[in-house]
Image 1 (cartoon, rainbow, N blue to C red):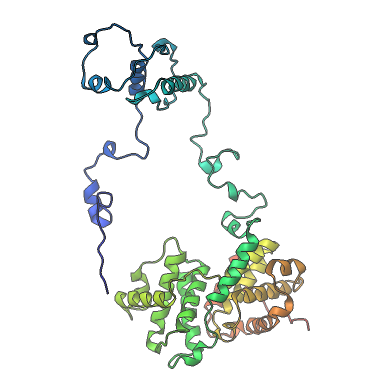
Image 2 (spheres, helix red, strand yellow; image 1 turned 90 degrees about the vertical axis):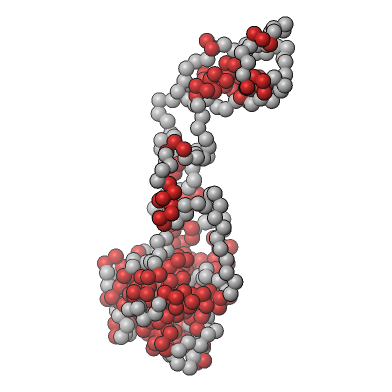
Length: 423
């Protein structure tokens, strides 16, 4: 394998650890480079007065004080016939920082300098506002201000800002069609377990149950769990794994998903600690490298949780319906058979439909049919399987998902009993 070294230039000196602290300890605050530089008001005012002094014909050059600056400008400054007369009395005091004008540069034309004088005069003549919007955050300023960075997230119907990525009126149809295409291209093989010589679906359920506990222990997002399970199934669709290395595959998949989804993912040592030091850091990194090569670095995968959030937001589903749909969808992660043969969007539609039915709502509506593009007949098989899973969820030997949704923030949906489906 080829090796590489990081090129360290002047901009990269001091990056990382103790070397940064040693390098920046003796640097004063005044010597740091600013983004736009520092404008000196007094220096600009002096340059303005010097640049606006009229040039008198017949004046001996010996009358002017000689300096290095004057010698350099002698060959470049052009003589003008009617220069604008600006004196110090015409300049009004102001607290505003003067705009950098054209007259501070050595090579200028008469037209550029005249425009600079008008611009500088307007700056000093503007009244100083009593209250300034500069001190306010960009996102909290005036609605019509061009400096606002989150104008597209202004919603008046109570939606949370992180949910608005699913609701873009102009592009929501194209976004949905893209997700439906990607879920087909990056789905695992439904019957991959038949070709695995040393593992089975029961071992897979134990592994997923352990990953649920890891997600809750480190307060990671639920989407991270879905991605990790997707990486495991896609990897096992192409690679045979012995029983001793199945947990290593799950650990590396969770490590990849956390780095992809989380803002502050747990460090590698944390994952090694979770395995009770069964594997070393080198083994986890080697497995991570192998998983990424097998997946061809295609890590962005639409999950059933993604579709549940999207459909719930667009149809205005209640929070208890959404929580029950998420619980049912997460229960499908424990069972590879039969849910590997269903698409994530089918599982999402089945979970939402069953959750609505359990709270006394219509099983499926025209609004959901238009939003999802599914009719009831298209996911009827998945709905029946999910109803059976809901009925026996409390008797599962793996209790991580069941205990997770007992909490009040999920409306204790795991304690509910399923209602019989209509014929």
